[in-house]
Image 1 (cartoon, rainbow, N blue to C red):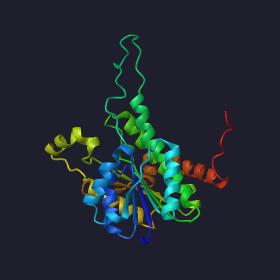
Image 2: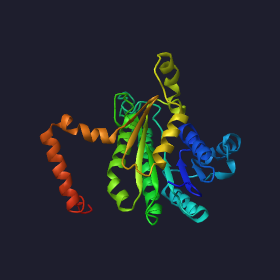
Image 3: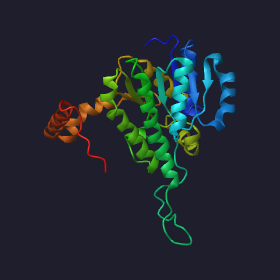
Length: 294
């Protein structure tokens, strides 16, 4: 993919993997415009980091937007279209994790004795899944006329494994993997590439409570910069579609093609054949027939 005068948008770009990815794109593609977006409260700090740590700060700009606010997100993409001629690469990175256990069954109201509503869990699912869905939809909408474009969804190993017990985060990242798979038909129709990256343990603010003990146990971890390298490689690879790269320290594995190859041994050849036949039927009739609105 040519990067001359391209525009690259990274969400959740004020810190961690998002900031490292923005800086990495800025270093490797000095003629491209790198647009960092995050909450307005992060603007001053992020702009300072751009000026102080980016190799080509004149080619990077911060545009604030709340990923949960559809109006703000549509204005963000409209501004990019007006000021920069549209967007070519989008990294849907914005994400968060709950700070207390969603399944704490002792979290009851002292007066009523009723279980409290999981408001933080709603926000985690909102940011990680619905925010990523909004980013994906808007990116595809603005790319469809070009019949080109690349979108990288930042999932997680938690999108494939659920053993950590971080309920809302795990559920939402499984949803991101679902978005990767479900978006392929539309992406193919408009010549857009949608792929994903699934980082394992990466020292960021989100993992601060675990990072030191992880290191003390001698377990290998990512760095935000390592994940950024893989995101850039996936995003710029014009031959890659529907893939998800697991990043676990020095280990790098493609998850989606291997999953397909293992279906017969997982389900049994008979069930795998039946599922393949059923999926072909749905494709042949033009897609799943949606129900009437309730």
